[in-house]
Amino acid sequence: MKRVVVLGGGVGGTLAANLIARKLKREISSGQAKVTVVDVTGSHAYQPGYMYIAMGSEKAEKLVRPEKSLLDGNVELVIDGVTKIDAAGGTVSLASGVTMSFDQLVIATGSRILPGELANFEGEAHHFYTAEAAADLRKALDAFTGGKIVIGIAGIPYKCPPAPLEVAFLIESELRERGLRDKTELTFLSPINRAFTIESVSDMATPIFAEKGIKLELLAGVGEIDAERKVVITDAFEEHPYDLLICVPPHKGAQVVIDSGLAPKSGWLPTDRATLQVKTVAKPAPGVADEDVPRYPNIYALGDGTDLPLSKAGSTAHFEAPIVAERVSAAVQGREPEGKEANYTGKVMCFFEVGDGKGTLLQFDYNHPPKPPKPSALWHIGKIMFNKAYWRTVPRGRV
Amino acid sequence: MTAEPTVTTTIDARGSFCPGPLMELIRGMKEAEVGDVLAVLSTDKGSKTDIPKWIGKAGHNLIGVFTRDGFDEIIVEKTR
Image 1: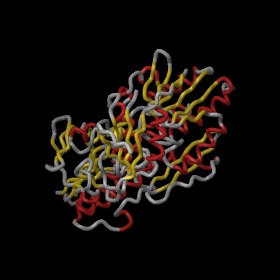
Image 2 (image 1 turned 90 degrees about the vertical axis):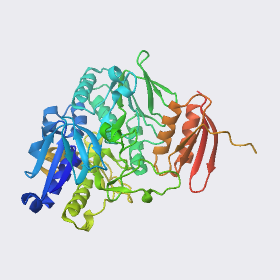
Image 3 (image 1 turned 30 degrees about the vertical axis):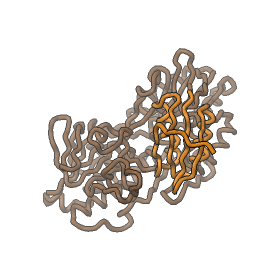
Image 4 (image 1 turned 60 degrees about the vertical axis):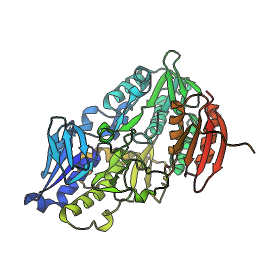
C-alpha cells in the first residue's frame, strides 16, 4: 500500500489531501493507497478573516471549523504534533510517540508568528495575526480617542503582505467616520524602499497613502520598541513615537522542518518553484547552480512554509495544491505528471482593501506582475463574498 | 586607488529577490560588531540602489558597490 502523509490542516494541506483523495479514489477504495492528514489542533482556521475581527466586522467563532468536516471521507485525520521528519528514512515521528511511514510526503506546516523575538512587542504592540490579538486590537481602537498611530513591520516575509497596508487604509476610514481623523497622526513604516514589495502594487498604493494623509516612511523596518518612551526605533535608527502601535510580528517556518534539517533557521523550506519538491540542501554552495541541487523525489511543500518569492497567503497554497496533488497521485499511480497541473506557474490571486468600501485585485504569476484595477466597490464586495463562500469552496476544491 | 578592506562577513544573497538581500544585510548588521565589514552579494538589480540608500539612512559607512561576474557586491562597515 502506498502511504501519502500530509502535514498540516491549513488551506494547503486540506486542499491537497482532498484533491489527492479524489485522484486516488480507486486506489484508496481497493486498499492500494491511503491518505492521512496530521494536524496538531484538528481545527481549520480561516486566517484572512482575523483582520476583519480587528476592523469590527467579523467574529472569531465564524472563522474556525473542525478539520474533519472539511476533509474528503477518504482522508484519515490524525490529531497530533509532528516532532521529526526523517526524509531519507521515509518516516514522520509524532508527539504521541507514533512513527508513521510515508511513500509521498506533503509538508504544509505553514508559518509561525514570533512576537516574543522582538523585545517589548508583547505588551506594547498590537497585531491581527490571531483571533485573540485581533480582538485586543479592536478594543484598543474602540478606546482610542486621538494621538499617534504607528503601523509597522518587524521582518520580511510575513503572512498576507497587503494586510498591514489594508489595516492602515481601513483604520484611516474608520477614524474619519468616528470624527477622530483630525486628532490622529497616522504613520506607516515600510521596511523596504517602497510601499510594497511588488512594484506595480506599490505604484498603486503610494498615492492612496498621500490621499489619506498617512505618512509613509521607507526603509523603516521595526528594529526595536522602547516601551518606556513609547517610541519605535527603525532598523535605520530613526524614531517614531506612538500612542497606539500596530506591528506585524516576526515570522518563521515550522520548528519541525528546522529541527529535521530540511530548512535553515528561518524555517522556510527550500522548494522547487515549478515542481514544489523540497530541495535537499538549504542553500547551494557558491558556484553550484540551483537546478543542480537534488530535490527529494517524494517530498513536496506548499503554502506559507516554502521559500518561494511569493505571497504567504491562502491563495498561494490554493493554487499550489493542484500541482502537489497531480504529482503525488502520478507517483502513486506510477505515471508521469501531466497536463497544466504538472508544474506551478506562480499563480496567486488576492483582494486588497483600500478603505471606504473599496478594494482592488492582485493577480499574478512568476512571469506576469499584477496590474491592479482601479479600486472600486466591486472588489471589496468580492472579498467579503469570497470570505463567506470559503468554507464551501476552497478546501473542497470547488474553485 | 585604495585597496578594498578585509571583509569580516560575507552575506551571499544571490538568487534572492528584492527585498531579500536588504533584509539579509539588516539581519547581518544586527549580529555584527561595530567596525565589522560586511559584504552582500546580490543578483537582484534593485540591491545596488536600495542597499546603499538604507546604509546612508542608518548612518553606516558604505565602502563601495562593485560589479562582479554576474552579481553585485556591496561592502559596508558597521559604524554604530
